Length: 247
Image 1 (cartoon, rainbow, N blue to C red):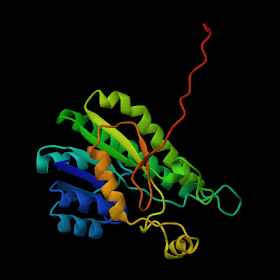
Image 2 (image 1 turned 135 degrees about the vertical axis):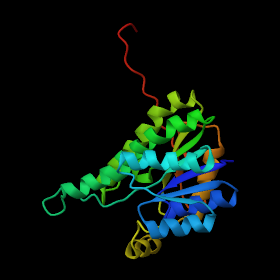
Image 3 (image 1 turned 90 degrees about the vertical axis):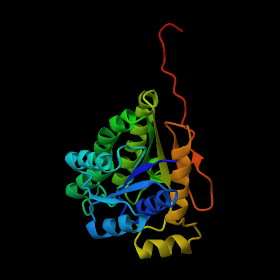
Image 4 (image 1 turned 45 degrees about the vertical axis):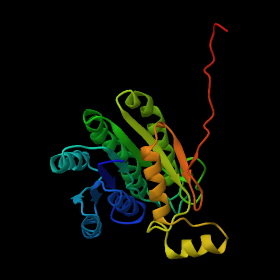
């Protein structure tokens, strides 16, 4: 079980549930979010530390990990969970480059900054586990938000590509791909539609329990689909063999 855990995007939704879950397991939890009031409230609830963090800023990510080590003397688990949606579309009426850049900054660049800040420190303190929040949109499609889907595909590529190198350094990296979850990223009308169409809606606490299970496993480089009432399901990626000229 992780003794020192950092969770980004932890002021609400999945991140807050993960922070609470690890707090109940006895971990020292560092809550990171741009939402100061919400993040501080979760940190107080779990008896942890709040660090205001804009994950789109490299220096904020580095400061978050530095503050964690300064407060608790080590680092065992990191959940890079901060994310947003609604990057718009590509038509004349819904294309917005600024919105696209914001989604890319949070969902992709923010994860890259978090990986850069956390991985060397996890390795230096004896190894541990790092989980990145992707989405079912990152292994399927999201016609309603294609830019969001692109970023979630991107973080899975990062996870799978980094995992072999960092596993050798004692750090296991995996991704989670939640389906429909009752979080603030889904407006009430979307929740009503999902439920009305008969789809299962997971609660954040379910996702948090799965995150803890994945963090404690020895697997690395995996992406797990997480849905209501189901155990984590590893995505079966195809094996692609490069064509050789000598065969």
